[in-house]
Structure formats: C-alpha cells, structure tokens
Picture 1 (cartoon, rainbow, N blue to C red):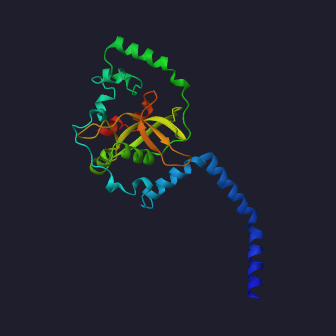
Picture 2: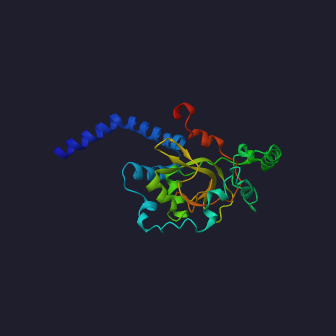
Picture 3: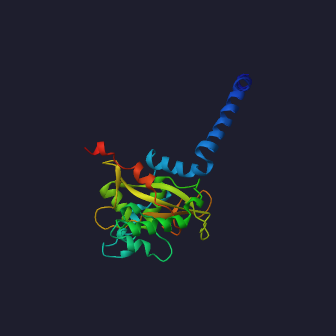
Length: 248
C-alpha cells in the first residue's frame, strides 16, 4: 500500500512539475551552447577544480616532478630580450627567419624605421586572421606553459606571485597533427599591484606569444613556440595596466 502511495505521489509530482523541469532543461542547454560554449566546458571545469575545489588537475597532479629550472646562463633562446621588441632588442625580433614575435612599434624611435615596420605589418594583412572561438582559459594556458618552460614558470608563480593572462587568440592552420591550434600573446600578471609585468625578476625566459594546441577534441591545451605571425595585442596590455591615478 505504501509503495503504491509513494509511486502515485511521484507520478503526481512529475505531472505537476514536468513541464517546468523540461523548460529549465532546455534553457540550461541554450545557456551552455550560446553563453558558455560546449567546447569550453572541459576547461571551465578544470579551472573550477583547481581554484574552487582545490583538487588540482591532470596537468598539476605531479608538479613536484617538474624538472628543476635551468640555470640563468643555460639556453639563451629562452631570453625574453631575444624575442620581444623593446627598442634595444628590435633587430633580433625582426630578423627571425620565419616567425616574427609581435612587438610594440611605438617603441621604435627612428621615424623611417617605424614607417618601414608599419608598412611591413600592413603587408601581413592581419585582418584576414580568424579570431578563435575555442581557446584555453588563463589557467589552462598557464599549465601548458609550465610544462613548456620545464618548471621555470612554476618557480615564478610560487616565488613572485606572477600568473599568465591570455590575449586575443587566432586560429592557426599549422596543427601538426593536433586537433586544433591557436596563436596568441601572453603577459605576466602581478596580483599584488594589479598590473602586468614586463618580465620576471632574474632570468628573462618568457616569450611574448605562443601557440596552444589540443591533441584531440576536449583534451587539455599544450603550449609550443609561436609558428604564425600575429599582431601586437595592445588591448591586452591596456586591460591589465594600472591607471595613472592608481599609481599615485
């Protein structure tokens, strides 16, 4: 008798609230599709696990086994000064054989040289690049760069409190067997002063832009050196700059 009453009660509740549940389910699917994006769910979940549940993630599960950071005299190719474009290192940046790392042309003092570079940038036709709609969130890009830099970035995160922020990402057709690759600028963000930092203290190993690739659909993002020319992301640096009045 009790089982029949319970079943009748459940059926009555479903009959009464079934339409509302169906509407809520449809709205949730629409939200995931148009607002979150189904392809972003794995990275958002990974971020939730790391930052809220403090469970870590696949790429953080064994950080103590990350190789020790190299000595600052090892492998000069990791020097930021060799691949960014301040006024001093500009020649190194533009003389790269294939890929030119994005740089701020406003740092070029010589007017003729600046005009030449503006013309060269226009010839790249960056307006033809496709802005990616599938890209890593900051935490996932950061974990990929920890592996790529063989622990150097992890040292910076632990010792200096700097984290990675990602700029506008562009679809990169050079997938090299990966499911998807994108290219974008990155910066180091200092939470203590709420602004970006040009480079970590000590060895300058970070580069201004990287590729991020997914080996398969839904897989975690892996970082690699830049393989495609992209524009300098002025909006990224403006977003994370401290306003003049906040510096006083």
